[in-house]
Length: 479
Image 1 (cartoon, rainbow, N blue to C red):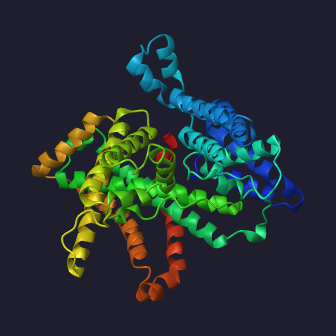
Image 2 (cartoon, rainbow, N blue to C red):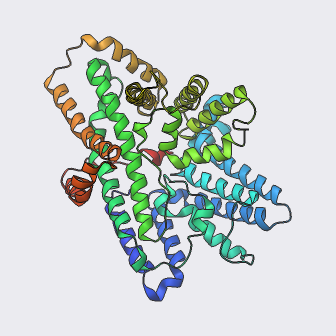
Image 3 (cartoon, one colour):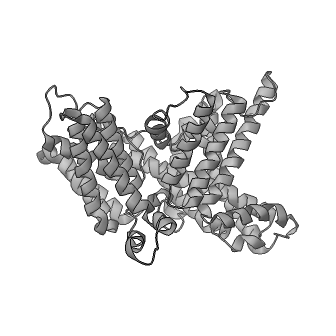
């Protein structure tokens, strides 16, 4: 069920009415659980059973890790089963093509398995819960006594299946979410967060990402081969903005819908394209995934505690696995490796300094260094997104070759000119969004712009109604 669809609006409003009825307040959790099941079953009924099985496994293993006589056994079994489910359903096809005959036997079986929506996100939520329970970082609450398994199961069900975050995050820590499971009141809704998150989120998705999608379509093979260098670069940067608008838009909508039901989701994007280093980029892009990989993988591998070489290997391995998490294709592994190499080179050459490119230490050169570093990181990250648009690695290589070889192409046909102008039009609001953020502390911005931000939100709402692109799924739903 897409966030940008009428069935989702109807489900949310219906659930909201039932949820806040005073006579049904003690059943609020069950109301949300029913909404979660309807949300997932709408498009993925055949895989609903797998989701429920995942909840049961994680409820049992996390409860045993906290209160059982053999917590390590419960935690180990829980994590192994989680990873096995992820490998079979998400990577079964890739495993089959690599090690088996995909036309018969186990190879054919693995290739025939469907990819459940949001499996990476709800499996990661389960792993987070089990590990936190085993490490003692998870506390079920305000109660001093041990909760019953039924209560723990209900809370686990809601934590994993909470529909605003179910398909694409943000990935919420179990301790944070469980502590918020309590009676909610309509009068406590923070309407400012709800309105601003939903309007900005839907604007980024429906007006920016969905319109850019229709124009970056020409990046597909073989259409891009006849485009000029300038248009190829513009489409690449347009796709980079589309990726940000699509996923940041989803995260903002999830935050806004969660706030309607009294739950707070963490910020998932913090203006990543103003990053001046690759390390900073991963602190601003998909923040909850970066934190998950840092805490549960990078630190578990040893982090930076075992020397430089081991640190570089840990960084590279973490990003490789992070890339593979995005999809069962070698292009995603290459993408993760690409970012891992960037992080390793940056750490080896630049250490932990703010700008990855440094021209000097005085005020002017520091400022120049910052802008050059920002541009460099954006260009490199945008090149990496090619592997999302063109999962076939050879096609991505051809695209880059065309950038360097098509400079003699005319590129001034009427369609190319129109295409270029539309991409510029839909990139501009995102640039304005970043510009306002970068200058938010300046007096003139506070006095003349931020003071009247309701005008901007009104304009975005108007454009959502009048200028939305063709409806499409969110990019990260496939992961």
